[in-house]
Image (cartoon, rainbow, N blue to C red; front, side, top):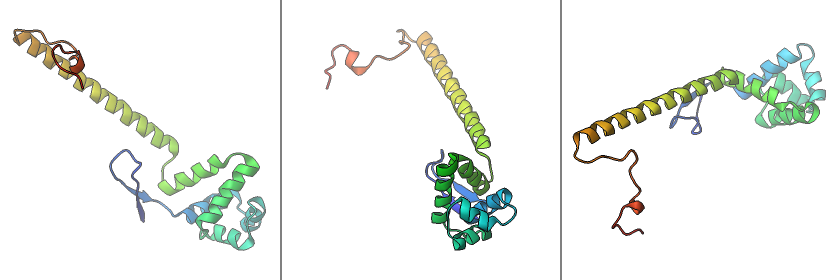
Length: 152
């Protein structure tokens, strides 16, 4: 199993277990799309040389060949995203929809946590104000708004 550390994920760092390598993923997609004479079909369809087409079918194609195939998919059919998303699903082992739903749920939970923290702080301020000789404002004034304090 291959691991990649990705800093763009929501956590500081995360080990991302890749289910396949890029060449294997593309070979699986091509086998599903073109079950017969795949090398000849993709040679013509994606305008790649015969050797590269055979490598794609075997799962040993490099990134440059796969990038060319994605580019050709966009140029000829205008839907490179379909191929790109299929590759991503095979590499990561999860469809984009599942990831997006998980992220929405995470954001909802984060928002609910922030709301509960805010409510707790308001209750604490109200309790403190009730016990003190002076009233605390709902929102503290900015330093610049306080009388007798120089700004800057």
